[in-house]
Image (cartoon, rainbow, N blue to C red; front, side, top):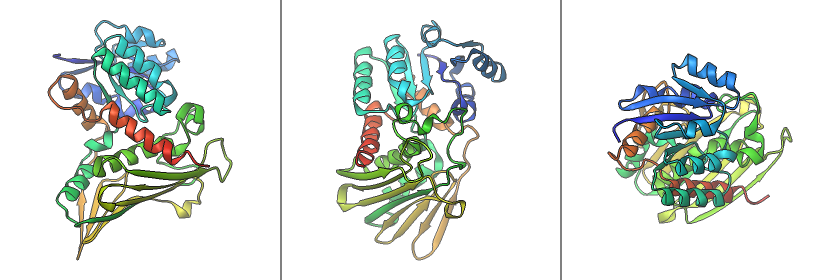
Length: 324
């Protein structure tokens, strides 16, 4: 495959800055068409981003003869449908996170990938960002020795700046998102835990709705065990005061700790003294991952995040929130 000719299904807020322009910035990559059910908004996106074509029907984009890869950036409840239709039409797929809303849907998508002979990558794009690559290298170098435990703490008020804002707040509608705000932001965090430490051998969690601002649960706690007796604890709350805001991850080992934000550009290594590593994130945050996906679709590199890995992350999310 010489060039990757992309189409986007779901040309909304995520595609606006985080991902959409990246498809036009890479070598051997072109964004040919975008689709959104609201035709006026699809046309507006296409005009502002110099995209040649726009559609208000997914099938028109899926069947476009020049498009050979499709980025699915719709809410999770429609991921299975669009991924299945695209794969059956002979297109490769870059699928937003979380991969689906339920494990059964993930399994069916994997089956479609196998039957179609096409390729699919999941958009756990933090794997490709320099700060998180640095964390992985520090762990591989055993910079803090034998690992003891990992903690994630995400405390946010109902109105915050780490959740993408949309006209319809579908992220707190479980039938569409698969859960609440946890299911929107935790896929990236759980994927990094899997990327760093492998698949957990034990998962337990609890979630409930404390503030009753919407139907979805707004607080989640989690415990996981990884290889070598590594213990994980996580707590996410989306109904705290502004003064209680906090976000970050701490990995503690026998010789020190590694501390980082999921939304920043610094990694701090604490041993006998503190060392801080600073990085510059790209303006289109998914571009490094999309570059890796392009290389995979062109058979020049391995899959940066497979459907099977996306299913492991889905299992982590749903197991954590299964108990009320």
